[in-house]
Length: 183
Image (cartoon, rainbow, N blue to C red; front, side):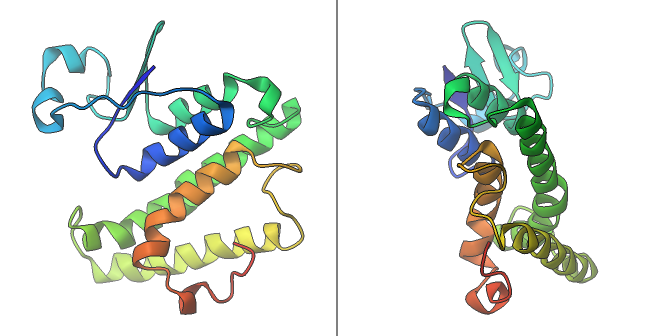
């Protein structure tokens, strides 16, 4: 399998970590992102015309969440997607929580720092409040648990941790994180 992305794309962290947990080899081919993303051959691989995409023997999968789910489900014996159908639903719930409640406001906050988005003071104020709410939800849930779902690492833990890598590095300093000791 080949995973096409650009260097440092936090969205692929969850894919690569899930692959590592499941013992699955994923190749990261070098390619000229700016040039190849516009080519007809590349556009044929992804309806959205963007990365990441995973190229498999059966075809391609686009969107990082779908790719991570696919990789996690390749080995059911590891429990990465939950040990039961119910746990799988819980994993999905936390993946959605991460995407909508955590990643959206974090991108508003982090992207301008990385030079990817424009700074907007009002949006930043709201984003900070939303991040605090999301971290409090995680804190409340993890206060008496080690993992988000069940009794082992699942894709839910991987997705949430991956979403927090750059924020912990750039904006969520020790003082900000102080109330969230379980996160």
